[in-house]
Structure formats: C-alpha cells, structure tokens
Image 1 (spheres, rainbow, N blue to C red):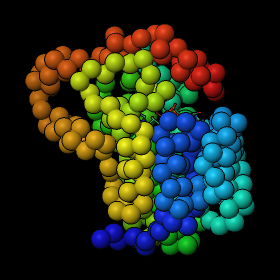
Image 2: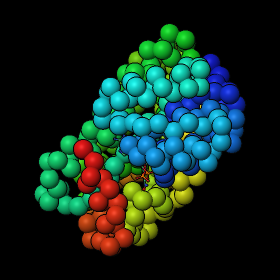
Image 3: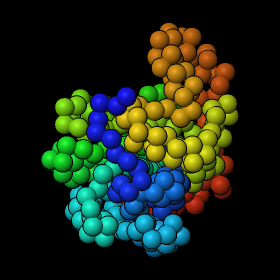
Image 4: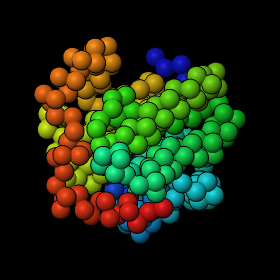
Length: 280
Ligand SMILES: NC(=O)c1ccc[n+]([C@@H]2O[C@H](COP(=O)([O-])OP(=O)(O)OC[C@H]3O[C@@H](n4cnc5c(N)ncnc54)[C@H](O)[C@@H]3O)[C@@H](O)[C@H]2O)c1
C-alpha cells in the first residue's frame, strides 16, 4: 500500500521527455492505452507531433530541449494549457549515450551527456515539483539505467550521469517524503532502441522499450523508489557490489564487459552517433 495519494492513470496528465521514439514513445503509448492524457516532448518536434497524432486526441506533441530550462518551462506551460490541467506525472526519459574509451572522448560530448542526462532531469524536477507539492500530489519518474549502479568500460561519462540521476532521485525522494509527492527511478538493462544500436552486449539481457514502459506505468501505482528491468539483473547488480574486486575482474572478463568499446558495429551505430553529434 503506497503512502502517497493515489494517482489514477485514467484521466491523469503525464508529460514524457524524449518521447518521439524509443522508450519515451513506448511509455506514451502505454499511458494513452490506460486512459492518460500524454504530452510528448522532444528535440525532434516534427517526430513528437507525428507520434502524438498517431496516439490520438489525448496526446500532444511539443518541442523540448531538456538542457535549456526556459525550453522546459515553455514546454510545461504549453502542455498545461493544451490539456487544461496540471501535470500529475513527469517522466524524465530524454537521454543520450555516446560510447567509447574514456581517453578518446571529447569534452563537448562529455558536457552533452551531463547536460541532457543530469541537468535535463534537474530542470524538469525544479519546474514541476513546486506545483505538485502545493497540490500535495504528484509523481516524477526518472528513467536512469542499471549503468547508474554498475560501471561498464566504454560508458564512463554515461555511467557518471546515471549514477548522478540515481543519487538525485534518492535524495529528492527523501526531501519530499512528507509532501505527498513521490520521486522514483526506473533502471533498465540494455533496451532495443536506437540508443543502444550496434553494440553487442553479449550475455547482458536486452529487453523491449515496452518492458520499460510497463515499469514506468506500474510505478504510478506502487511508487517504489527503484525498479530495475529485468528485476533479476537489478538483483545481480546489487550482489556484484559485494563481490571482491579480484573475483569480479575475472567474472567481468568471462562475460565480456568491454562491449561498448570492442563489440561495436560502427555502421549500425553511425546514424545514432550522427544524431547525438548534431545536438548541443
Ligand atoms: N536503450 C537502452 O539500452 C537504455 C538502457 C538504460 C537506460 N536507457 C535510458 O532510457 C532513456 C531513453 O533512451 P532510448 O533508448 O529510448 O533512446 P532513444 O535515442 O531511442 O530516444 C531518446 C529520445 O530523447 C530525445 N532527446 C535527446 N536529447 C534531448 C533533449 N536535449 N531534449 C529533449 N529530447 C531529447 C531524442 O531526440 C530521442 O527521441 C535514456 O535516458 C537512456 O539513457 C536506455
């Protein structure tokens, strides 16, 4: 039984960032199917609007750059005006994942990763939480990653950004515990979207965007602090923290933990890297 006031997904207004494709789009679709009004925000405004049109009259598509607080404020204002109600749930989903050896990454890419994945989430929370606290009701879901709990070669700055989101979520959840407003994190393993395209994670299980969407929707009901998808990978990640480093090193070699450097199909990954290379 949740300690937070119930939010009925049917009729709620949910804003989803990075919703033009991938996990965000699957989440928007799942929410519309459950009767929610859904605002899709994305850098790619045309794609967000097309996606919203496909989802029907309860969905709207908007331009949003989460790295720009003014853009985020304008997005939320447009959403509340369009749907004529306050945002009940914010899903901070927009994210980027450049890959490659740490020493070969450039500063611009590092900053883009931290700007989108960390400051984008902070902006959304700063803007949406005051109204939620005032109303004594609301929910924020931050789509972090199991990379926010488990380091991987070739994803160091992405790891840093997701560890930051996990910490941000946990601390704000504590600060807001008596306000009726919940903050939760969903931690996906690898998901079949453009973001992970071309990387062969080997034994690491990959799931569909719809699996993450289902976890986001479920969190509106149970409000748990963290939900890992799949849950057994989350449990393994927690257990791994207790394994001595020398044992872990051997296990990591066995499983091949450098996929984001050595098991990359450059051709398959090119269009994703070009897309995020054009950002920022
Ligand atoms: N795909 C995976 O393997 C995986 C695993 C764990 C966590 N995640 C996380 O899930 C989230 C969604 O990832 P995805 O796989 O659906 O990626 P994706 O690339 O398929 O979709 C991300 C969307 O975010 C949008 N976006 C990027 N920067 C933005 C910005 N500044 N403002 C607004 N929108 C922006 C993009 O235009 C895109 O439509 C990310 O936070 C990612 O880190 C993904």
